[in-house]
Length: 419
Image (cartoon, rainbow, N blue to C red; front, side, top):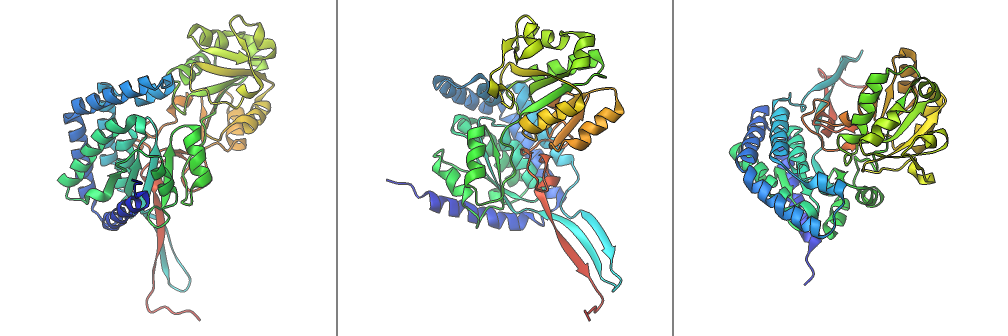
């Protein structure tokens, strides 16, 4: 028997659209109550969530999941605590809906306001990372949006356990349960249904690997907030402080290799290298990183010759590409050619060089003397993120509650007519 996926999508979509209409004017207090209650239930039911995660991990290990994917899938009590903290942080934020973004009065007396409004219904398609269930549900709710979640089959049990906590929070706050919905089947056909659901979904956010994101960007008829890859660069400028550079480079690569903010390419200025030698490369090798490089850097013991496609590659592993460059302009040219417009960091004490780097690159996130691992909504003070957007739409970088809003114009006259 062939399941009616189209009918299921219409049923879920209609409920989401109705919930979104109610959420658009839900009070800040009601949304706060739902999120605080959800945080309570996540912590109270943490053992159930961990038990579900054990089931997902066992199935994933049997299929031979990669270490990077496993790291994204695994939950610990500490990570659940982080989820709870994120929910409470989002709850405490100011309500983004109804903010007056700009206002002015025309010579004819018309008073015009541009006011933040919810997007409507957000569809989130994600792999492996079950905490997205909480982050996406919370951020969409905060911004007055309904959300339809489609988690990956590898994290289904864990995601459903977290989803149940989110719905419990909605019930406690007397908000529509359909404000947060989870696609109940793991069949990939439902991804296609979501991508075509222009009647029900206002924007799609994919969270996952290159295969998933590429499919979404290629097939979606609904607008998309997404990044295809996190090819993040760190550039050690000739005026970099050595100790700062050593700390940042090591952290940017090794803290967590499986996240999109992990550094995948290290660019070293020739003058820095002449002055300080191979210390940055040696630190990485000592930490267990495979450094793939070329030319002069191949003389460093333990390095490996880079393949042509290693520059511009997202490893998501204890591997990094490295290259010497002659100044900031050559670093900028390299990043423009090989980067994915995600996150780049410059290590320098020279203000003019840093300003040039910031002005001439158009990645969603640019950093100075800081690890690319900070490319995260929680670290930006958003409480969490629904994803990182690298496109040119209004949402770029970490997508938090404010970025999940659109706007409308409120125009007030006094019997005003147009000549």
